[in-house]
Image 1 (tube, rainbow, N blue to C red):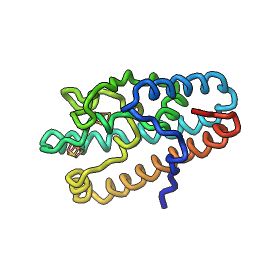
Image 2: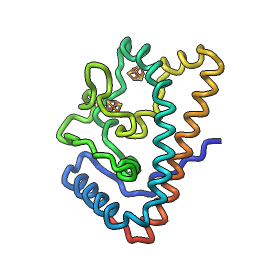
Image 3: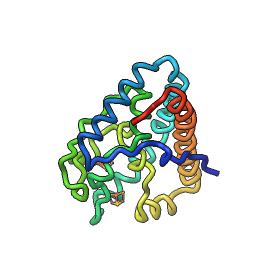
Image 4: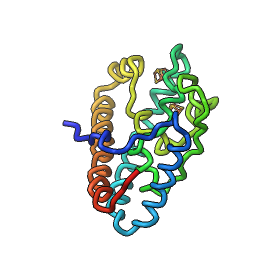
Length: 182
Ligand code: SF4
Ligand code: SF4
């Protein structure tokens, strides 16, 4: 069973309201620097999730590099490249730089982070949904591949969801206790 976390309990980051979006990110940056000691366990959980990303990445790259170049309906739109609150929590827990999002773009247009060879952001710096999403053509390729690889795929997906849930379960009570308010 996949044990995730309902991230709708967190405030919404709305890329269509740039000033508010950046204000919230600024608040979160300060929240992490002001409460660095109390957030240590969150950081530890985030490091475990990063390891899951690192384990999973070669598998995803293997399949996307074979399927995506032939795709007629590329899924990477700007609106998917913008982070949700929980993504920012993960980035800050790992001390990552938050990408310099250009919010003045058409949400439906091709994502600003697409380069010649796919996404230019390291996987850990992408919104979680970017790694979590597997379109039908990708799933078909994974399905018809070796059973051992398929089993690893299922395990990696579950590990990713569980470890992200662990970060948020650690963070959420602290957010409430420390008066997080945006
Ligand atoms: S993940 Fe699927 S929908 Fe997205 S670009 Fe690749 S093949 Fe196309
Ligand atoms: S994978 Fe990269 S290019 Fe695609 S939507 Fe996510 S951030 Fe944008």
